Structures are given as structure tokens and as C-alpha cells.
Image 1: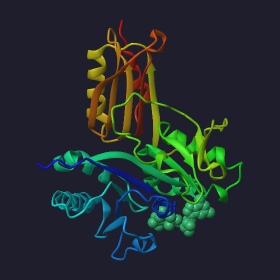
Image 2 (image 1 turned 60 degrees about the vertical axis):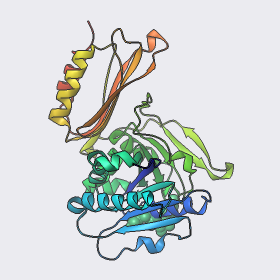
Image 3 (image 1 turned 90 degrees about the vertical axis):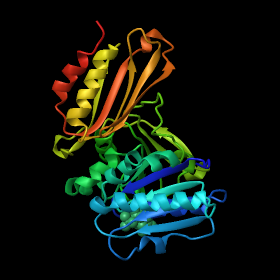
Image 4 (image 1 turned 135 degrees about the vertical axis):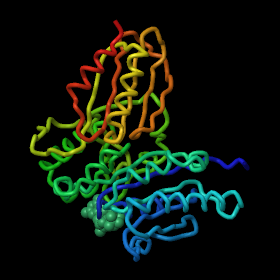
Length: 343
Ligand SMILES: Nc1nc2c(ncn2[C@@H]2O[C@H](COP(=O)(O)OP(=O)(O)OP(=O)(O)O)[C@@H](O)[C@H]2O)c(=O)[nH]1
């Protein structure tokens, strides 16, 4: 095979009207150096969004408009990606990155799975991250009424909270707490009208097996008056409301040093029994007599393991495993996880 560089791909998701097109337009207006291919996945025969997107020589938009997202998207997306690969091989097109904008009603799962299932795609494309836009004005209602809204948040590596100019300061802690209860692993950025530096959502390598596992991190506000600086704000102490009852939430297991064989068996059984419900999961684990961190990362039943950087300080050797999932038998799993602790 001729050597083509791996094309980075970002999956951009978020409910209807959450600001996906606005974000892309902002990127395109402030991006002179890169050629970007955007694949849009829309319902219905008429695709309105491509008409709304700014067009110039540095972007190309491919529309996928056929049929129901859950049955046809994998085949159609795979086909679009094969064609792109062939055109790149033939030297007919040259792009620096690909952004897939999903329809606001879509669960991102089938799109994400395309990148794991297909070997040619895996060999030519580097999945960078899932970015989810959340409309702060409407998200609480969307979560109450549409299961797909929690799935979009659950799959995210980064969340961009939009339209905070349309809510009061008092409403924000509840919204942040609810997002964080669903997905406590994704960093949250708050941005007005898509104004966010591209470094905060592109090339973040979320699918690499790296050592980062930051939970309940707080959020970042993009300050446009300071040349788009991201200012960190810790979460205020919002009360988790039982009434939310979202079907997806974050589960965290924490322990000291683990036995390699036992944690291997635990992970295998966990994935076997609950993989279909587990959207994303990541573990940074301390293994007995092993100086390096063991990294586990997965999406549903596709999992990767690798050794990461060594633990520097013996007191740091704490194993953390976070799972974003539909309802899991937490107490039972916690007990099983604790039995993997090295004795
Ligand atoms: N007030 C306010 N409006 C915003 C913000 N971000 C986006 N909008 C507006 O929200 C509306 C919907 O934004 P779009 O970018 O079209 O949203 P989308 O996610 O692409 O929408 P669909 O393709 O229908 O799912 C537009 O009128 C935007 O101008 C924001 O931060 N504040």
C-alpha cells in the first residue's frame, strides 16, 4: 500500500439545534491552513445544513441523506470512507482532517463502531475524539424526553456547552451536575456561538491508550476577551437529583494494587456480560510488582490494553476504572472488582 498519513477524524454530535453547524463555521472562518473534509449525516432527502455551512476552497462537504441512521449509516459511511481512501491514494484529493457531523437525532454508536469494525478504515483513519455539543437552554428537557440525548453525552470525550447566554447563573450548576453524572470523564467547555480554539476539540487523541483519567474535573469557560483563553472553574456543589434518572451514568471503581490475572478475568467477564451497555470505559490500574500503569480503554466490546508511564510515587498507586454505561449492577460489580485487589 502506498503510504498515506493517517487521516484524523472527529465525530461531532449533539441534539438538534445544539450548535454543531455554528461550531464548524467558526472553525472554518478561523482556519486558513488546513483542508477539512466534512461528512454530514442528515435525515431525509433534503439536507439543509450543507446550505448553512460556509464554503470555500479549503473544505468539501459530503452529504449522506439516505434512510434511517441506525440501519444504513454504517454501510453508507464505510462506503464514503472507502471512496475517500481511493481518491487519496489516486492523489485526487488531499485533506488534513475529517469531521463527521451526525444528525441531531442520532445515537453516535453506529458511526463510532464503523471505525472499529472495518479493517481498511482502521488502517487509514485515526479516530481522534467524540465531541458532543449540549444546548444549555434545552438539555434538561431533551434528556427527559429523548434517550439519545444521554447517549450523545455518554459517548463524549469533550463536551461543548452552548447557549449559556440564554440561561441564568442559577440554572447552570444543575445542568453541569446532570451532564457530569452521565459522563464524569469528559472535560466540559462552555463556548458562545462556537467560539472555541480548535486545540480544545481537535487533535486530542482521546482513543490513544494514554494515562489521563481525570474525573469530575469541573469545566472551562472560553473567555473571548482574552483571545479565547480557556479558564478553569471547579463545579459548585450542585445537588444530584434522584428524579433525573437518566439511563446512562458514570460508574467509578477505585482500589489499590490489583492482581493482573484477576483483573484480566474481571474485565473479560465485565465486557462479555455488559459490553453492549457500556458506551465508553477506561481504567488506569496499578498492578502488583509492575512499575508501569496498566491502561484499559474500550467502547462496547472493543477493548485495548497497554502499559503506560511508570508510577512515580508508591503512594500514587491507586487503580481507577470508570465506566459510562446504561444501568449496571454496581454493588455486585464493585464487590467483584474489590476481589481483584492483590493480597
Ligand atoms: N444564543 C446562542 N445561540 C447559539 C449559540 N450557538 C448556536 N446558536 C444558535 O442556535 C441555532 C442552532 O445552531 P446550529 O449550529 O444550526 O445547530 P445544529 O446543531 O447544527 O442544528 P441541527 O443541524 O439542526 O442539529 C442557530 O440559530 C445558532 O445561531 C450560542 O452559544 N448562543
